[in-house]
Amino acid sequence: MQAFRILFLASFFTLLLGCGTKEKESAQQGAKPAPELKGKRILMVIAPKDFRDEEYRIPREVFEKAGAEVTVASASTEKATGMLGMVVKPDILLEEVKATDYDALVFVGGVGARQYWEDPAAHRLIKEAYTGGKVLGAICIAPVTLANAGVLKGRRATVFFTEANRLKAKGAIYTGEDATAAGKIITGNGQKAARKFAQAVVNLLASGEKSPR
Image (cartoon, rainbow, N blue to C red; front, side, top):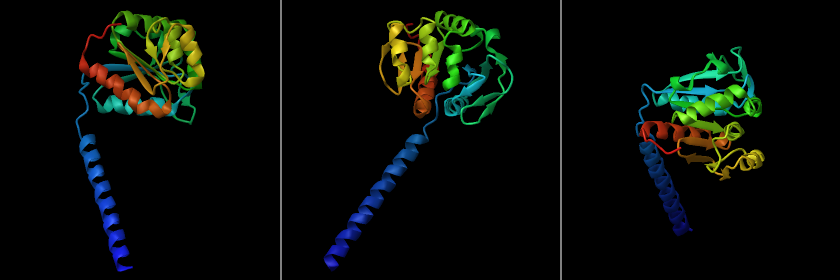
């Protein structure tokens, strides 16, 4: 019985120390400085109603932590409401945005993002950004807007699984991944991938690489 107790305690402390080591390693890894985006400008496009809260909140936090300046655009400058109740006051009307004023354009998802699937102002902005070599990002169902604007043809991309066929119909190569990078376009498949998606945008902007379109 005594031997069993000794074995149990030894196993317990080994597990405890092992977890502590991993936590320390994780903390050290998390302490690495974020890529520097000072001077970079990112435009985030949200729907006036029912944008996905996490897909706006988390990427914005990541972008600003990396030093980027974030501007919010929407079809209206009235207060926008997220699916979970978040309220955001857009800075500029989507139709007034010039792609040349920004280093990256990011379309936020949520059921309200359907509003931009066939929106002329959104398509015009996407095409301007694409031809200008800007970083383009879209998450959840928002990649459908990129596809409909014609910039995903022949390109690997992901999207919320219910809309996979919409991407394929426009010639995109659907990956089903949480986040997919293809040239200067980053796509994400939903709120659970928000941080990974945002970090991919940051990394691409920070790299300064002239990725092929």
